[in-house]
Image 1 (cartoon, one colour):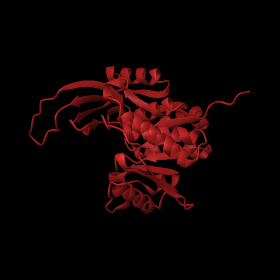
Image 2: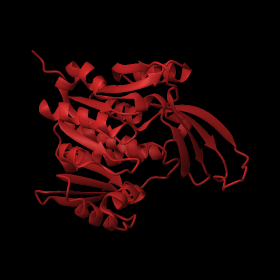
Image 3: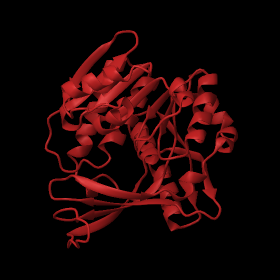
Image 4: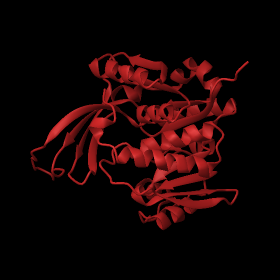
Length: 297
């Protein structure tokens, strides 16, 4: 009998994104004339689930959408990428999560999110996904849902012998309980600075130093955008990998692509360094691909 492929389960957010292209992002009180706009399915959770599926493992999503057009589009997108979304609930009385992102001519962006249905996630959603949790090799968490729900998900997966990855974004204070349940924390320089409580330089050397400061976690990964990524764990393993040189078209979603691809590598049993190299390659390919060619809703 052939064993089932490893499963990456993502517990997190789903957002319907509206992407705006403009020469620059507006300052307070300023109106900027944009070039174009288009919709996209996102949310850190949704993005990471799609990334893991693209990387060739079984991927499942536990989340919530509203009873609206945005929610139906988000579900259709998970289906299109082959993500198991049987544990994505329709939240009564709550609109789907959404965001507006404004991209400037350099490819950088700023965004505003409205969490909506994502804030209804709770321990009950984990209990109702017990069959999925039991099969999970790697659980991915982020900070776009209530922390109590993240703790419930992490506790359930750890009890079944799975690994827990926390992409601690957006940055917020984390409880000792969630930290204790996390096997690897993944952050960028800004988030590392928030968690470590000291300034972090957004360079490969700065990422390596920051990873060393996150000693309350068994292992830490700190990304430095186009510079690369650094890793450190309590066993003394530490290394840094430079980013792959590419022409950057858009950085939007690069972090989520990296995280999903890394989780897929771990689920397949790859060593950490190999999984990080594959994640670097996946992120490089994404940032070099125009938004409109990435596959919309």
